[in-house]
Image (cartoon, rainbow, N blue to C red; front, side):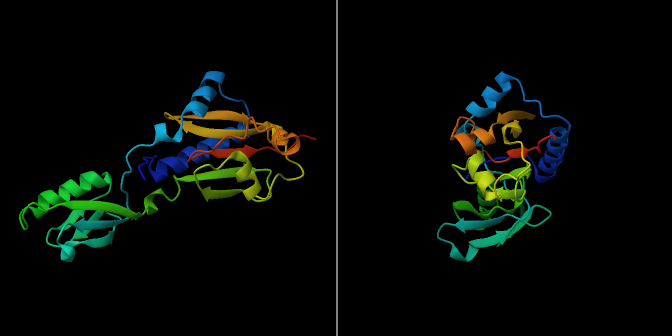
Length: 214
């Protein structure tokens, strides 16, 4: 697991901005921006996982089981490790934290070897999600799963409402500090079997479906 996302507060602010923009306008982004957003694979966007507050980490010290512990990252960003006490964990990649602990343990044991495993990613509870809003049975926010598509998200939200304008749906995707608006033709997907816009979702995606104008 090696993803790095916007901090939770920044992501929530981005989400609010996107939803407000979606309500104000349903204009798609430029064809070039859409192409970039769709061609960027999940592997390409994956970066180092950065530990955050409320994560739980397993600190394993080779041949020193009494020093190996599973501990939560406190709100102040620190963890408590036997012998050396508090260590800053938040904001670091697991391998960086491991090296920091090894350096501190050198005063107590010879050639320490430390590994860090993140056993609970609480700090990414909201950033590693996809959302659907608007004219669906039940607007929802759900953890992202590999292979999840637009259609999966809509069906999981109870399908389109009777008043939905499915072919005017929009998929909003964060990309390099921007939000790209990608048109999705849900009516074509559901009624004609045209899956050309049944895009695979990425963490942070927001799908919005407007109601028809009468």
